[in-house]
Length: 489
Image 1 (cartoon, rainbow, N blue to C red):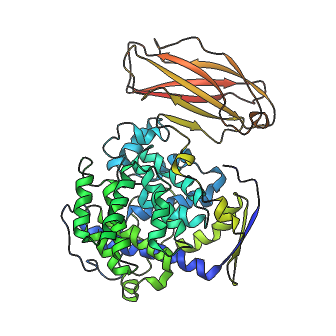
Image 2 (image 1 turned 180 degrees about the vertical axis):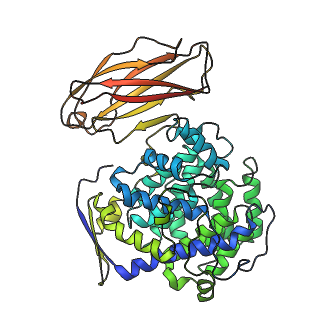
C-alpha cells in the first residue's frame, strides 16, 4: 500500500470512547446470551439471559482480540504481520478445537500463514474462528477501512488460509469500520459486499438475506433458506452464520434486543452471531443504543478462556480497561499510515480525503498471497515470498517446484548467494547460485519482480514434516539468512 502523504484527524474523545466501549459491552452481552445455545441445530425462542447477573461468560471471540491488542501495544503496529500473530498464537492460544487446533499444529510444524490455515483444514477453514474477532482492527483504524481490512486478512489467514473464512472477516471488519461514521445499516452492509468476491458463498448468503428482507419474508424462512444454501458445508460455518448476523442487523431494525435475539434464535454458532451483532450496534449507536437493563445485567467484567501466556495477567479485566487500551494506542497506530490523529473535546475535524484514500480497496487488492505461499518478513536485508506450484504435500520420489521472490529492503544493490540444505537422498535440479537484487527505487514500486526457481525431488524416505533450508548469504550481510521451505509427508 502506498500511503506517502500526511493527513490530519481530530476526533472527539468522548464520542469515540463511547463507541469503543459500547462495542466491547455489546460483544460481551451478545456472547453471554448466545453461549448457552452454541451448536443448536434447530431454531430457538430465546428472550434474554440464562446466566446470573454480573457474570459474563468467557468467549474466544473476545479473548483473541485481547491478545491482538497486547501485540499491538508490545510490538508496535509496524512490526505486526501474519507471522508475528502466528508466533504469539503458538505461545498463547492453547485450544485444540477445529481450525484453532489445526492451525496450531501446522504452525508448530513450521507451516507459516496462510499455509497454517490451508493444510489438513478443508473442514474448518470456512468456519467462524476469524470473523468473530474483527472489531479490534475496525476500531484501531477509524475511517480507514482499507487498513482495517489488511490487518483483518493477516489475522484470518493464520487459521483460515485464503478461504471463505478469510473473506468473512474482511466483510465484518468492513461493516464495523464503516459503522463508526455511518448509521445506515443497509448502506454499510451493501458497502461491505463490494469488498469481497461476488461469487463467494459469504456474498451469496448476505445477498439472499437482503433480497428476502426486501420482500418481507419471515426471518425464520430466511434462516432455513440459508441452511439449504450452505448444506454442503454443514454447521459451524461462516456463510450461514454471517447470514444470521445480517438477519439480526436487518430484521432488528436498529433495536438492540431484537437484533441480538434474532441472531441467537437462528441457532448454530449462537455466541458468535449474537456477539457480532451486539458489537456492531454498539459501534453504530454507542452506549445509548444498548438497553439499560442489559447493561446493568452484564456488568463490565471480561472473563477469558482461550489464552494462556506468561503475561496473561496484564490483559484487560474489564470492558473499561480494554477501551482505554485501544484509545491510547490509536494515535501511534494511525501515525504509521501518515495520519496525524489526536483526540479533542471539540467537534470531529479531519481531512475528508482520508475516507476516499483509505476506502477503495477490495479483498482481491489486499490479499497478495496465494494459498500455497508465505512470506519471510521483518528480515532486515530483504523480504522473501515463497510460492509452491501446488499443495506442499509430497510423496517419495515426487517432484515439486518452488519459487522464492526477493524484495530488497535497503537502498543499495545486493548480490545474494544461495545454497540448499536438504534431507538425505533428496535432490534439487540446477538452480541459480547467485542473484543481484536491485534497490526499491530501481524496481518501479513493483514488489517481488526478482526470483529464483527450485525443482525439488523427495528421496525414498519422506517424514511427516520435511524441512529444507535455503541459505542466503551476501558480502553485504553480517550473517546468512535462512529461509525454511517445508513439505508435509
